[in-house]
Image (spheres, rainbow, N blue to C red):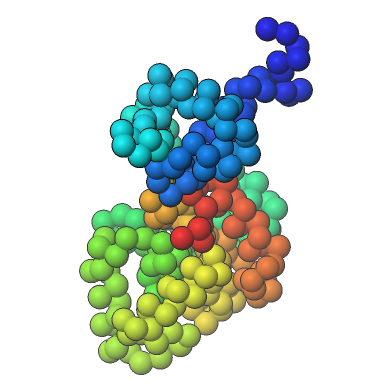
Length: 264
């Protein structure tokens, strides 16, 4: 193999192109023709055909009999499942949490959904920590915490239903408990839509006096929250859409996710 086969960064140009075609196939909604795949990958059909022949031989692609369309094969599924099985959402995010907290000057936490609800499993303080009783093992409420609202917006409904019903009953018994939310199923549905649309959840100082929080999900391959990363601080400007803290949090969670928030 000559140096001309390289791509200038230590890789192989032909392999880069083949992998690009495989990624283009993954991005298509289903089986596709040779011309559609070539167009999506921005390569000539003749070259796409050669790559597809190799993919077929390796089991990375398969071809329907009558239509002749190509789709990802069992080999691609095996690779994807292996990658998923090895993806440790919490520990991977925890490794970089300190850097996120330093960048934003906010206290950070990571929560997962446990038997009791949204449970804090990692806690990272900044050089100027906020004063709060929260810590490892704390269970965050669904309706009046940024963490809980992120789980509401990006979790499958079934696991959280019993906790949600309990909190809605408590809110109905205590009017004004959640001042920024219509604590009804319709109000919760509207809040979930708003959170998903902006890509993060936020609460301000009415819930924990003097503190504000923003939260975003770490998503799995089904675009459901495997974990939620939350930043807590005192600056009310930090929770506004487009703030430096919100941008940093959303970038962090995209990097930790298998899918990108908001792609649905």
